[in-house]
Length: 422
Image (cartoon, rainbow, N blue to C red; front, side, top):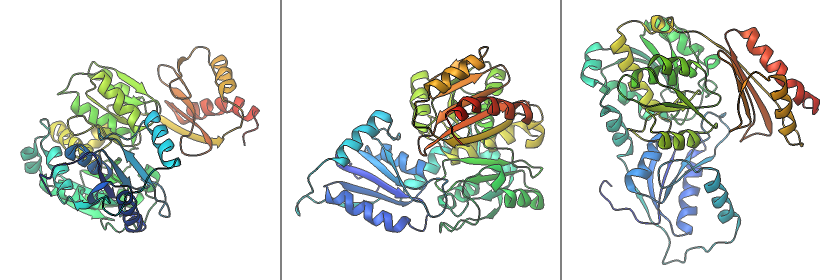
């Protein structure tokens, strides 16, 4: 439906591959039609593709039907504003007021219409391949061997095509877009054993793993070791900062390896609250060269202001091309940090008393209160914050070794335990 003009009632809808997706997709289309919205349906597509379609069509907004990295039984909606960004806190509150109140249904003669957009993924691929610092012809000549795990998610609808365009020799698992996850869908290192074996057995140059809605990318190095999702943004930034001036924006729970990479390039990292839209908005405000989150989310404004695994794939292959050494050798030139994550039930009492106690305990720390409390030093940090999706408090620490990171978590739990959180 390329070229069709969008109207003020247009809403883009797409879904990931979950088994319940077609059912929720039909319900979503009907619900939007019932209030007079005209729907542009992109079908099964990555979340970043859906965000880009909202921008392309100048739509009033969009809905991505996905539960992201959550287990197979879940499904959900991600709400996208007219800018292609997810709704921020104030926008979400406004939307909640609307949907919780009474609003008129369309009459028979004002029902919304549905039209399809079959080119959304192709446009997304074209935008990635058009990046000025991705030398597609040279990557094709290099013929990288790539191992791929799409977790039976929507990545199977885009990543293989991207790798084919880049001339890669692909060995793959879990490409079927049927939502029947054969591993835990979150692409953390602990869930990537099968991909690690595939990299070793196939002698691949790199392994890529995506989550079901394709906004997160995790890496396995050429030695068959999953290196952790925080490296995705750090390595992508390492490449982009050769070509773009400006800071890097990352959320408060992202590894300080991003700071090491930024310092190497003569720039700095600006921290934002956890949440993709918070990072994206700060990137726009600061004129950032690149940004993202430590969960494997890479955001590059040249494509769009949202986490995008295909963008990460292209940037990492370009980095391998320019380095002309195995990924494991590149990694050996950087410090390694230990990450520890803990969570506790959230108390009924306000957390301010906890934060005050922590600031007294760690009086020598640099303090950031944008999102809970983050205390940092030159080579370590701890972040205590209430979850936005669960009734828990998260405690995340990073240090040069595991014992130091565990100590930070243990000391941070003391005031939380005092509120009888177990």
